[in-house]
Image (cartoon, rainbow, N blue to C red; front, side):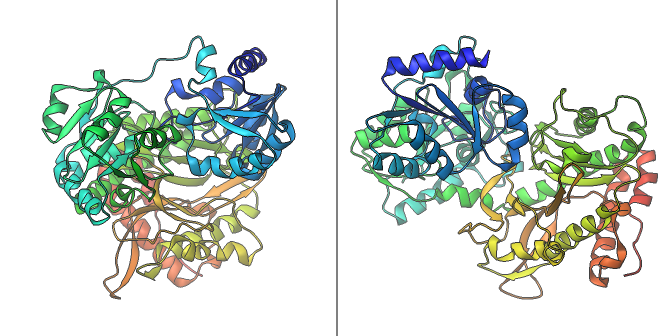
Length: 591
């Protein structure tokens, strides 16, 4: 089936006069999660991971994925005539350089790429005489006969009780930054910045509660907002008020810019697709290419958002604890596997007030599958679980007052002897971040080593970041802040929510990760310093801890954390979970 699709695409490219083509896994908004109509990469290759790119040239094809998805890509691509490569600018350029020749043209859909993303490839290929050309129509859309319709659910107001600030106040605050930088307008490139700025939410994208939208904010605080006509209700119009003009055609956004005499627009090149920037250029509107100021503003949660996140994490923690309490009994049943575990946990969350959706597809990995960092369980891959071995569950929920993300690693019975040391070293790194105090202005990369030191002492490490930002009933992976080896160029600030998730992975044996969400606050003991406060509430498996590897301060932190978990959640869980919770949070002694 896929070969037929490849052949059809090769023919379509020939008709458009290009010898190669790029197929990224994204939509025109550069979203992490995309609606089914934009799953072009999955339709073409069978690979449905959240990061990847296919390249075609002269009837050759390659799929580029990062290390998280190597095994998944091998399984899903199978024996198709598609080469598998690493997802890096150099590997993509190397493959295309070998597949294309001087005078060839590489086509791309300008709505699906950013200029910074294309720049390294453009430079490399131009050096060998290969030209990149934006195509007016996406050739896959022309041959995808049963392509799903674009989503168009209603956009709904997100109440002040959750946002803590009216949209008009936000618009005035951000517009002040436009005035400071002498810019006429800010380009609102994707649904997340629109959701935050206008206090609206929707259900157009799986796991991301937004309505597909983009817009312009002007220096006087007024705005033009694109939403599909079917997405607009009377309640939404009343909510937005007279200061927001609604348009239902994307081209009308750029006409509005001309009508409002916009001469210079602030546009984040990392968020803005090439097509959008070209529309401004065609109208002689100068582009000010800087990070979107909304990115930082929505990362710094206000007191109402932090209060909501605490409340959401309490409800979510109660649901997770009921799942964890039932799991040992469930795995003794026949045919209970990774997929059934996800379904059980989902059912627990659905019983909690306000649950809207999972915040991402749960990572449910038993034994060796847990060692695949971003493993995605399917009916075909789901392993039956037994009362032995190690299980990793990474999941989260979307609630109107907060977004959750939590990972727990569990011993289901007897487990490999090495796991206890590995788990405890991961726990030591987790505690090191949780208890850290650091001066204001510190970057995430400057504290990453604290999470890894205990593993490094044993010659071990993990290949993913230590922490990512999290939204407020928005994306579970929100920037710009992060904790990791790579430079973020963004200081950690009070009000930001980040994950704390060191791990260790033993191929074909088990995966270990301990993840809590924390928020950053000012340190009362040391002015000018910051520290973390826990949001996530769920026991850390005591069976996997080697107390002798923990010092007294680490044991104190663990016992204090478990006391907080027990006292907070005990009134909210069922009777059998209360009994389990007492045992699961029992004090650890000795060191």
